Image (cartoon, rainbow, N blue to C red):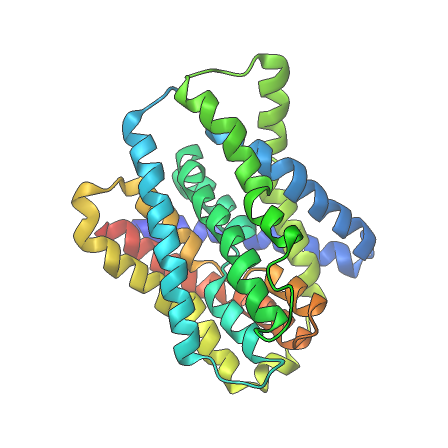
Length: 313
């Protein structure tokens, strides 16, 4: 019960920040242009700083092993989610790629990392960022393939390959991992700005999500039965399956790592699904509804699932 109260209170804080973002939209304190600028800062500046800051700790061989295990688990989780999406998603050519992507890709960055930091501390971010990196790898490979369409040329182009390998997640790891392995602490003139910028992740991410939630139209998703299946898989089935798989392995795995992966897997549909749907002519209204709807529903699904994981893992 205590774990449920703890997680619920942390999720409540995140949604309170989203409420501020929604209010800012209603009062016209920010607009689409300014929010897009916030997103760029969040992705290109804050995220790498958050990762580097998470790696600012003395080297620990057990944590390095846990990091490797997290990569394997995150990889297998995405593969299994893709298989599930093919088995469950049903729809036309415009909706089907959106439903599949919504099943597979969680908002592990904007929703997962703030919650991992709140519940597990910097060590949770250390492991949780692995899921974000794997998200990018699969989004810019399989996700791009689905959204573009299997019959179209140039499904995996240079830009996609570059995004798979060079993104804020991989850049942050490339900088932070050597510092961790060598137990190098950044000098104050560098480390302090990095830490302060990392602290912007939670409030900025929640303000952005709240802004977009305030403008969401749920009519398209409410009229699509297959959307309920995708939302249920994303919010309930996949995270509970993750707990079930990790349970028999818990004696040999780091508990913080396992919980960080469960939190990432239990997050709502990732916003990048909408960006891809818009770029490649898929059902944008459905994608917006899935992102927004699962975000709202996650206030009810994430606390009990994460609290359950904290009890059994």
